[in-house]
Amino acid sequence: MKVREKMTRAAYVGRFQPFHYGHLSALKWILERENEVVLIVGSAQYSHSFNNPFTLGERIDMIWNTLKYEKLLEQVIIVGVPDTNGQHSLWVQLVKAYAPEFSKVYSNDPLTKLLFKEYGYEVHPIPFFERKKYNATRIRRLIINSEPWEQLVPPPVAQVIKRIRGDKRLRELYTGPV
Image (cartoon, rainbow, N blue to C red; front, side, top):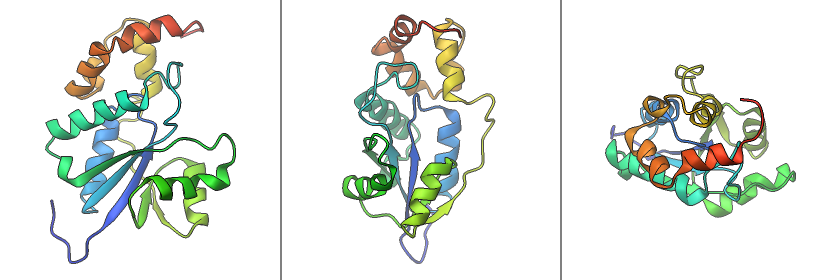
């Protein structure tokens, strides 16, 4: 951890379905700028669908094991936050209730950026790290098609997905065109 005069803690918001090397690169990039990160796992209440195949607990398991593997556990706090079912103006209040205090937000999602800016937060974009390669939708499609996907996620994430039979779950759930 880099020593800074003032303790800084920022939030990094995502669904992490699944957590992949692009997310890990973004997190490391944020940690070059901040002392700590509150990693906010959004859409916490959703699971067992194509867009949200993994439960909150499974995603936390993937992320926590990756942080342990990368020796980043002491700098990251993982928090799950549910959606507000279309009542977007309430979501930042919910995040503030579920998460420890933070002063900045890192996100590329337009709605997330707008909501936090409206609440007076300093919001920063995150560079995309090989976006075409590291894309959760693409990874889910590769899993469904039984194509190689493991090299796109940290080893602990692949281990969790295989242990929970998440690959089988995705193939059983998905019925549309891939």
